[in-house]
Image (cartoon, rainbow, N blue to C red; front, side):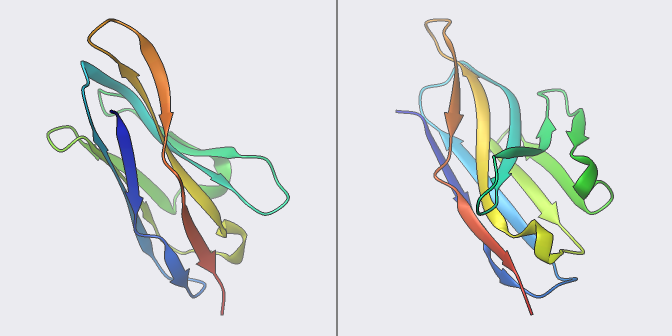
Length: 120
């Protein structure tokens, strides 16, 4: 019923840029915070960036100044603009959102992930 569809991943050279998108659809009362996580091989999943419904954002120290998170509430979509990419950014990136249903239940939803590979 609720779906998160990610797009924009791929192969890019160091110093390059990518823009990830995550579109949310389904029966939704409201969307609260939205964010991006990533998981590199052999490592735990970590928060990359998050944004509140009011537009306030925060970032992991490793991506500050390089990544920008934004959202389009009319389209129920969150974006992650990634600039000056490094090999250390290579990971599967996951979209996450906290949604309140019409029955007043609050749940986390996750996308299936999109692979970002930074390599020369």
